[in-house]
Image (cartoon, rainbow, N blue to C red):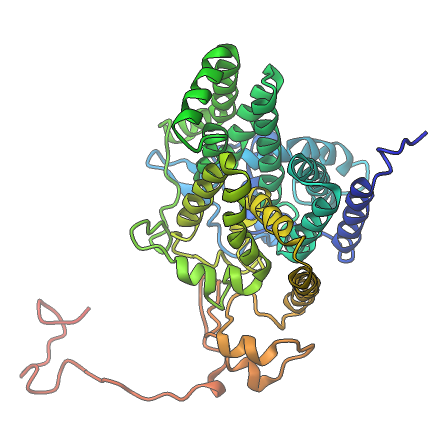
Length: 492
């Protein structure tokens, strides 16, 4: 028999929200879910357990998979090591998370009449189900975090704003169910939840959960090492709080030890893999000269306000979270400093990436989605701070509903190609704002469509005029008196 707590409004909201996500996830069959970056995250599993070739010394099986299923146009997911082996570009954290669903699919593939090759339909569907399970866990733990600080009404508002008013909904429902950001959102929720629990009432279980969740976050995406600021700085905001935190730590040395051990254990598989395949415990796989971090010259303004994928442009509800830092500092100073430092450092790191718009398979800035777990707290203090101001409260309530509807509508636009996945401009955004279809004239306002294939062709010549800027045959005077077909004066 269900009790009153089970049938509470927050629990019903979680179930309904998850049901909506599941329905939309399967409107289109997930037949290409293991492609592009996800293919790189996943490749460890078939390489090790089906083809027994983790070093990819025999490219034949991989080339056959790519030819048959076309999960990628170029094999950027593997990188040549100095010893002749190929190393997976991405760390293996997601493969660890995928593993249970991979093994289930591998057992069922042949009995269901599909090849047990790692990419047939049972594997695609099983990974989609695994991603949805991560969504459910994330929603449950996220709501639990909200209830630590806010009453039921505020928690429900925050839940709706984050799940349906941001690009979280687009990511987990459509193109990103098995992307790292979905799993990172859930892991961040676990990390924050058990960080709060440990600081309220220290237990060994909470300490281990903090260490493991932080370890897996870093194993999935090493740049997320900034997550360590959350447990390290939680409840620190002044000199006395530092002393109190120190005393709390030395009072529970076994907890600290367990936390560190759990963190290290999570990272050991990656070090062992790099050593076995590349010959070194550390291996830098981002060797493409067109990508990398620009820490001294980050693209922060473009990342936040650029119409290509700008976070505040396509997820404007998070502007209120920025205002909420004032309310957070005013009403809960002891957690304001770690949350602010985490956000600023995280923003600096992700906006320093040369491809700051983070490719085509995302609406808005998907790299910040895991941080929504933390940013929901200042957003909540903002909502709580204006609830007693009736005129302002009514206006902001209407704005909140509008922003949720805008996000859902623009998600629809994105799915239907009205909002471009790669080539948005300010002029085009304004031209298609609120539109359900787009004209050829409006398409000309987009950035130049650059092909992602190995060979690029200019296919829309009618949209552009061309003229010669400079012509030099290297044979006309006064550049050269004689014609050279070989030697130091010849142009190869």
